[in-house]
Amino acid sequence: MTDRPRHFLDWLPFLWARVLFPAPQQTPTNVRSPSLLILTVLPALLLYPTLSFRLLEPDEGRYAQIPREMLARGDWVVPHLQSEPYLDKPPLLYWLVMLSYSVFGVSEAPARLIPALAVHGTILVVYLLGRRSVGERSAFWGGLLLAVAPGFTGMARLLTMDGLLTFWVTLSLFAGFEAVRGARFRAGWWYLAAVAAGLGVLTKGPVPFLLVGPPIWLHRRLTGNRVPIGWKHVAGFLGVAAAVNAPWYVAVFLREPVFLRHFFWEHNVLRFLKPFDHLQPVWYYVPILLGGSLPGTVLLYAFGKHLLSGEPDRVATRTPGQGFWLLSGLWCVFFFSMSGCKLPTYVMPAFPCLCLALGDFVARTKWSEVAATRVGVGTTAAVLAVGFYVAVPWYAERRSPMGPPEIAARLHAARDEAIYCFPRNVDSVAFYTGRDDLKSCRTKVSQELVEALIQRDRAVVLFTHRHSLDTFKQVLPPQLKVTEAVPVRYQGGAATVLDRLLGDGPWGLCHVAVIERVPVPPAPLPR
Image 1 (cartoon, rainbow, N blue to C red):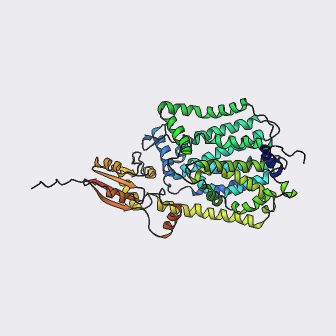
Image 2 (image 1 turned 180 degrees about the vertical axis):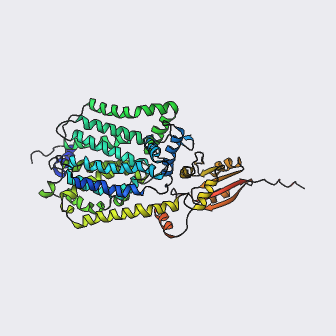
Image 3 (image 1 turned 45 degrees about the horizontal axis):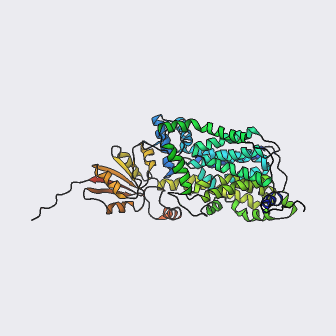
């Protein structure tokens, strides 16, 4: 070959575009009604009837309580949690949940409706926009694998920021790729990507720019894409995204000047570079992706062989679109793996891209006709249905602070008593009891809690770690007495097994205790 690269840095684009993904660009294909029907009905059956179960601590309790308090206050600018400004995250999820509360009432299902719609929307984006770059059959298989992926559908439907963020990142990435993948620059797709990225920033901060921009830039370098993207296009993209965000960011800064440093520096830069919680090893997301991508995980070995094969029939199926979606998913995994702060839900934006790349492989090979593939998808969907309809509600009820009737009655009766949480918040208690005044001692040092309790005749304390009550008793001064202590955790059985697998730290409450101040007898006089 006379056009082989002569320099080392030229080999990577050569291998990517001429060896790995040399097939012609896919032209858009039409939507098929049966495919769209399946990808509309299947997620709907899995998602919408299964939203009414107890809130899981700590995230769901927090993100249900904040919009409840904002709605009660009539304040759409500053998020509040337990009547204190909560500046860790932007407000878009809160706003949408507030709208849902206004229409359907305040309960778990309206709160979870927002992430459920985001999950469903992401699946439809993968199909409706993905068909433009990989074809209709590939996009259908990608959407189907995503719909039954437990790591995506199971996690993203919970009330966290990440399901909604994934929708905006996916829409921005798909629209941005459409803007630059053809023979000419398409401004409409470009600015749709900018709006979606801006809404992603309004959901969780600047991370959408880091998940969308690098894959598009890198893919252009690897493929030699000549579609011009000038500085005016980049400035226009950033300007549109800024216009989406500026009104709220300015408004909250005027109300709470500490917001910019607290949010951007502490909860974005420092969390990535010098994490102060959720420290995990660099390989943390590997088992999450492998287990969470079932049944697609079973095909990974065959997919790898397909990518490395030199057979002409296989080479002809490896399109630039397949390469872009694989690159985008792997970039997301790499980015979050480099962060010191890790949670399972952070890597969720990788699932749509990886499932579309895998779906493209399935559709272009014999695997789409193999009965085992369809059985695997059907079996996984059935297992998810059992989990969503039965297992998760059962587990949430057993792990909820409000699950045991006697505990729920005790907390409802404590309306006029101060309630302290130690060492984690238990915001679902406030949600279910209609309170906004739970007091949190967010430190593992018991002395702060002791000093607070000495000022009161009687208080209820929610201990959220299995050893917290015992630790507290060791430093209890004579003027404080534990008059009642009720364990919330069920002992034995399947719940204990799940605790061992999932960890029993943040999944609920451990003890409810009543602490009273008692008279201290005077010290005996010396003889």
